[in-house]
Amino acid sequence: MRFLFPRLISSIPGLRPFQAVKTSCCKFAFMPGLCIAVALTLAVFFHEKIEAQSHTYPDFLPALAEYRSRLLLRDANELGQLHLTMQKWASMGSDSETRLTKMAMLLYYAEVEKLSFSDIHEKQKWLAKKMQTEGITETDFHSVVSNAQLVSLILEGVIENKFPFKLERLEKLVTELNFYAFEAGEKIAEIGAGQGTFAVLVALTGEEVEYAITEIKPALVSLLALKSDYILSEIGSMQVDVVLGDKSATKLAQGYYDKIICRQSFHHFSKRQKMLRSIWKSIKPGGLLFLNETTVEQNKSGCSKRMRDEQILRHVNKNGFRLLTRLEMEGTTLYKFVKEPKQ
Image 1 (tube, helix red, strand yellow):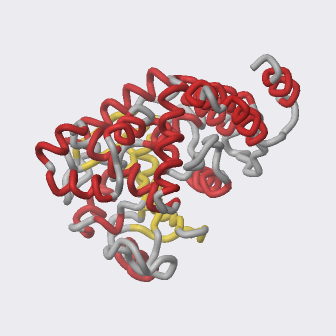
Image 2 (tube, rainbow, N blue to C red; image 1 turned 180 degrees about the horizontal axis):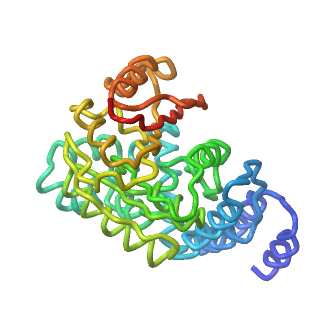
């Protein structure tokens, strides 16, 4: 190993890819566990060339890179096991999208449904059979759950879903954050926050905003409460309030928020008109509503609830909002609406 470290240290100032370290580690095939742990740990010291820029949040990309480094350094052995799990799935013929689906499924049942691997086999026979069919073992389950924060970033498209877990192309994320243009002191709410990953990214911008996240499932709200505590302890720049809403109302304070965001949740609203009226009441006069939606025109497969662009505009415009601008990106469209005075 003494021959490996000088080469690694000498390469740090440059931008050579980390694969060189991986190749060097292969010389120590008789110690695979140790080599993987060392390689993953040392990955954090390699600078990555990030093409995206954020003039709106100059501290965001350095903060994100530092946060990734902390996740990689937390437990190299657990991280090595995640790498081996993903390698195994790939060798079984699982493509990138299938691997993401597997990770999302395992994380959901562990974090939201609070099920262990043995619980699944005792209480969810259909799921246990599905996992067995797809070759998911208890070790695989543990490797995903023990790296939950890293896996969340992978599912969000921020980190690559393969060794050495580099930051993914960030232009899309940076463009979205710039579109929202958060400013210090603003009151922001996110409707349908899922497992709360975007709130972590907002906290990493360093903007001192007041942020609220809502969900309609009590189990998700419990998870979001833990995520709120996690953000405060690990990032420390933003207080996150968690609110249990329902299908018809946000349950947020009225006339309080400068901006409300719905990221890939608007098409799931089963009582769309009532929810839009509730959102309208929660936003300050002249405040903004942002939608991030994948339209039918952009992707006709997948979720059957997806909407056409004109459907989105029609529903929102007739419920007290006016479109200011929209921005089409790869696979999604961003919409910005302003709250109109009550007619």
